[in-house]
Image (cartoon, rainbow, N blue to C red):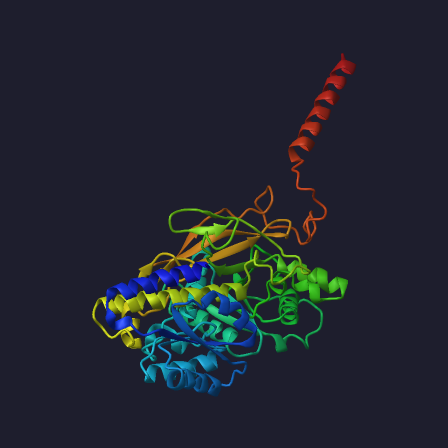
Length: 466
């Protein structure tokens, strides 16, 4: 029995012990794509519930309405989960709100779903982009940066909403006035190949992309603007937040470039990358060690092999993480439904279920402990990863955690660049794939040999003089 099945079994047994209101089978409506169904289905289906799967592969809004209506009217679903994109999520949220059913969106980023201000039955187990914007703002405050250059593709959904969330947090920050500048991909493709410095001081570039070619173009645009100094620029990109990101594409953007000179230039700009990702629970991924009672982090992540199997479950990818969020959503739903029944309330009401989720805190989440805000948005913990001197390993050095509806950075490691604590060279001595270093530190040996040579020379010199 899988971990998800075990948790659901315990929860449902608990509900059955509470009272007779759970005599009927609980029916879940799952809105997924063809790509995700085979992955989600084994993790969710159990003998204690009936799960209806609705396949949606089109992002047009009307698909979200049609799907939700069919699950509500024809399948009598007690709760809705997932969807394919933000447009469909909004449509599904409208149906769920009208029929007073709890709705747990997943791969959805429209800010109107945040804070339960418009849709009163939407519970954000995936967190919200507002929390992402708050974590970026916290990262800014820690480093005392004054401006931000946002580099993104010209497309809707995640990239657009992410930019809006970041800008909203910056404009709402009373401590420091910040400016944001968006560098679009189509504004740089027509430029010549001469570097054009970007004049904003202490700038951070926030990457938002969905494929290898786009990221290569965006990073090259930054190279043309001279954004290659790690002590002045920091790219902030997302490792495991958006399910359409490719892990290999994210960390090895130069693999799509055939030109050797351009590949080297991309690597120069890549030295400034800071990867921001979600915290992963210790029990979810191997090679994770606890830092404290509330913070866990993976101690390193080597750049993946582009030829490796993307379906290898030993690697944390965006899609495997999305499946885990779906598992957490179902787990939270059963807990809240059980709690609602224990208070002799209508356990089928989405508004009551949402109210029960406010300020809730439960252990046992697959991704991390489930802690909800007063607006029924899950608090998220973010980790900032930094590139090692040999440009082959990312190490977490900053953990951004929530504190009373705000985000606070915790230093988990000191960012070191070589022995002099300075940024790396444009061309790291170990090479971009660590092929010029064997992993042994020969500094002490070289220093000892040099000292011995000097001593022998001085001794010989004094003997000759005498």
